[in-house]
Image (cartoon, rainbow, N blue to C red):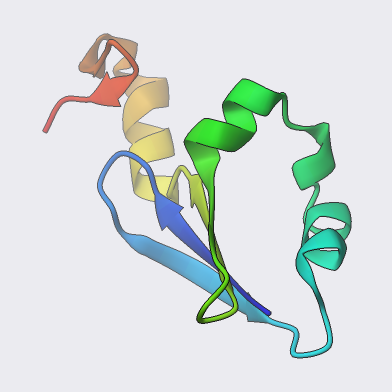
Amino acid sequence: MRVEYWCKHCNHFVGSLDRPGWNEHDVELNCGLTSLTPVERNESVAYNREHGVVVVQTVCDYCQQALESHPELLVEGKLLQ
């Protein structure tokens, strides 16, 4: 499987992990997805089974720094741009 990480604020591609021998269960265990609540998982993880890709929403370094410096930019869970 391929695991892709995308920023949930700016939609910037953060990185990927290619593990051809992994299945969905392996991805969840090895990428820490089992620690997410059902709501977090629903909001942050998408499975494209047809293409063998798991897409995980994360926060890129740029958005993280912006939020730490200016927390007021975060309104209703979305970074103002």
